Image 1: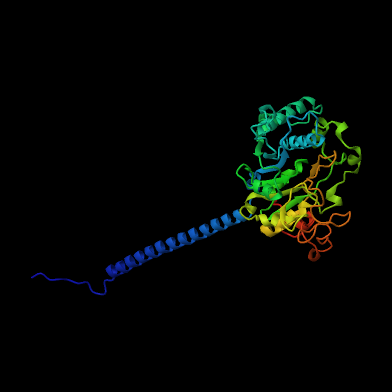
Image 2: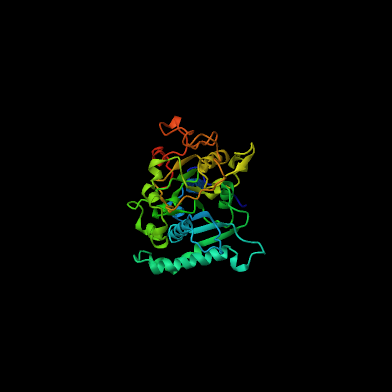
Length: 399
């Protein structure tokens, strides 16, 4: 008869083997679970670190991203009367300023809105004026400048690309653009830069304009001109005036009295610097209007009216959400190529109000007689001097 035999408890080896086997399996499963948890935690930490880095990079652009920002300079200019034979001195000055900005290596695009373009079929084709003629005239002026420039100070590297290739001219058939229209022009598709420098056509910029690339998105800059000081203006900028503008056209009295507005009158400026995206879709036309002198109606104003820049700043304050505004004229320098008699847009009498011989810009538009002075942050109003921007801790520019 077959019998089943069992080992007694005095023979423990097989039982111990089973226990060791179970312990090994448990240890293996524990290690596997722990390693998966460790990998999961590491993945979560790496993902969180990556997201934090992305968030940081989106709010604090590095130097590489800042360097990629493009600067577009925009202005308006009147179309040349091709039937006229007399030279207009100030037109020559503007052409010299435009050429200085075209040759400035820190400006990526120059956009000229050419007003007064001829479209009347009754005018002979040879007397019509448009961007075609403007481009031809500027190209010829560039050629003449290069021939007459005795200093040979133009960087030869610029000639790898025709400087005129960065000029964009836009025909304007509705007359001189208003201040509001110029800001709208800055938002148009023809302006390809990230940062817009909008100025009167007789403003010329030196190498300091490169700092505009580092402007923070929530800061609006205005620039008072440094004038035309022969002791201060860089030779690389002044040469365009000296070569293109004939000295007999300049008014010596104006030249002698030309002041550095940056130091003497911080409530006057000719240039605006801002990020294009910051004002996109935020402007309101009604804010860019003033009372008419002859009626109670509101009317638009132009860039070259005396005091209009103060009204435009008020309009920008109402329309946009800039954190603040600074007159950064000691950081970015603009030079006035205007030593010939003044040609401000005229409407017959004071366009703002009557106040004896002194121009007065009423509230709410402000001006040097209405906006509080810089005698304390609480009692003052924009634009602030750039040193306040830097001392505030956040700064106007990225490092």
